[in-house]
Every structure is written in C-alpha cells, then in structure tokens.
Image (cartoon, rainbow, N blue to C red):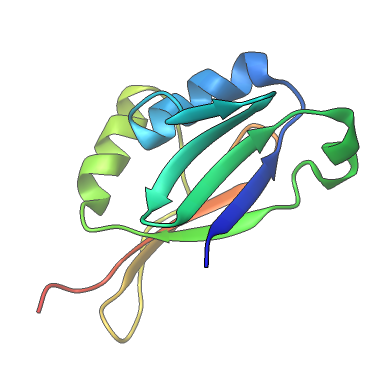
Length: 114
C-alpha cells in the first residue's frame, strides 16, 4: 500500500521554499503541478495549490516519525521557521507541531532511544 498525503496550499511560490527547508531538500518528484517528497518507502507528502484543493487549505494534519528531531528543529530555526513547544509524553516520545504559512500542521515525533 502507498500513502500520498496531500498538503493543499494557496501558492507554490512561497510553499516550495518553505517545504524545501522543512524537508531539507527540493521535492523528490514533480508530477504535473504536484510536488512530492518521499517520507517513507511508500509514503509521500504532496504539495498542491490547484483550485480544486482550495477549500482544504490549512486543514491538513500529519505526523512524521523522525530520529533526528533536534537537528531538524535547528535547521528550521536557522531559516526562521518557528514551532510550538516540544512536548515529551509519558512514554518518552518527543513531539512538536509546526504550522506552514497556510496553517497546515506537520508534527514531528521522535521515539526515545532504546
């Protein structure tokens, strides 16, 4: 099974640079007007600013499991991207929510080191 998580945005002009900073690289693929970042073996985050997605802008919420949370947050801070406070859950998972300029939520979660 493959997963394509669509991130509706108002304008690719600002969205592409923001997401390139977030993921630390340009899109892995461009298919038509959609820009795709591969985030797992069969999982993709897809940017789409087409009118057909306009009513969903700002309503997307995804959580990505990461192993290098502090490195990512440092990279984002270097580029002026802010985030909510990092939370640590009772099971040791560290979690943070980051909003893109349209209000879409991209959360990062890091499991504790065994």
